[in-house]
Length: 286
Image 1 (cartoon, rainbow, N blue to C red):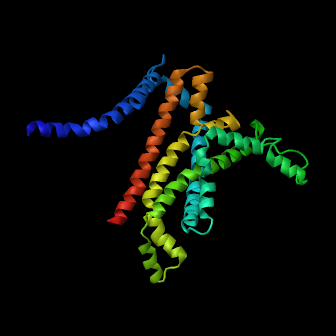
Image 2: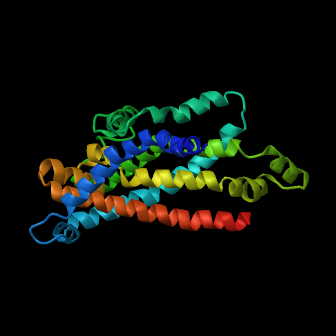
Image 3: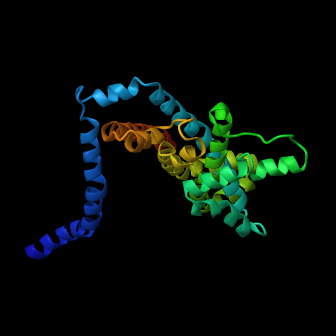
């Protein structure tokens, strides 16, 4: 009996072993190696970080990364909730709308950036259409150091179009898990559509919203392909600076320091979401 009991204790660990090995080999060891490179410097173990923080490029990269996250994530969340409620009504043709909304999930960030460039380039589709209907006399330039605000606008539009479907799928899944009896009971008690939305639907969607915000925030700090292809270093972001220092400057130590900074910022924001949103949800549930 003792041997059987010992075997049963080891079975869960044997089942977890492949996942643990994968995490150690492909995540744990790279993180340790990145930390070692980040803290290697001729000016002390914080030398790379001191150099990074003192540069204007780092300050702009942090500002642009936070700005893109602050603009894109709320818009994506609001759009996702609206579209999820619309699709959940299951009107005639809703499956076609669902396919259209979810189709950008199949695109990489590089593909999305190239599509946007083909639209907003000087000889792109947008300028061709506007020129053909005589709305403009010459092409509108969206790219270049002189047009950074327009570049930022194109990046925001591209990122909202590309990443909203991910949030939408999570919100729709949470919406479909809500028991319809709650909404039917609210309707019986005279709740109108807005009251049912604010009093019933959104509170019950909080777990799905929390998960969507966490995942979307992680991706927001990893935004690279769209920004780099559309703006290069005209608009610096943290991942772009990591790539720049690793590839163009051939400095693995500074690039690793940037990578650790991204990891810390992601952890802090994720912790903030968990501590605020989830705690409120548990208090209301209590």
